[in-house]
Length: 241
Ligand code: ADP
Ligand code: MG
Image (tube, rainbow, N blue to C red; front, side, top):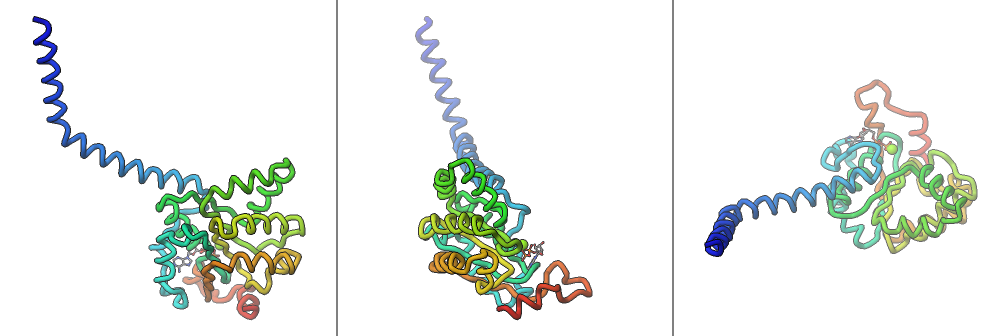
């Protein structure tokens, strides 16, 4: 008596499984999709962006010299697979940080691990690692991030030691993993930033060997609805370029 009941029970179970299978399949694909997007979300949160900015929110009318297609192509993250770099140069408020965050978010959505920090923060991080005798370990750890974003190169000049650490960051990533760098200064003035023209030249050489160098121009987007049309540093930078 008990055996048929069990079989019956099992049959009922299978039938109910079958009944729910189509729903379960839908649930599964939704779960996969949400796991993928939550993976992106986790990578975006872990990247340390100072704000959320999307490439789609960028107003290209304000940067007529910038090619939309170039940015759209960079947003496909193919440059990361090739360990190429992006350099954004231009005066304050022209969208360097906005675009670097936007490209960083796009990279995270394409499955890449990304870290964002200012040049000063990167150097501080490397200095700490160096002081604890684990610079090589730290550089190896950072190489597992497909994309590092270095914002604000040039706002604060580096001492020789800091410049050497930064050079090591650039050279360990060369042809292995990508960098996005942004600076308010043209390359010709990086020698002053790194207090060593030889180190700066060697660094620029490695960065631009496989890179898109994008130059942003014009007035600060922050000041677009104000009467102020020129910032003190703006004129100097334009002259330097
Ligand atoms: P930078 O890093 O070059 O100093 P930001 O990227 O921080 O400039 O831009 C300053 C502010 O203006 C940010 O809020 C940014 O989102 C906005 N912004 C700058 N350029 C544009 C643009 N072309 N379209 C939309 N927003 C912009
Ligand atoms: Mg900025």
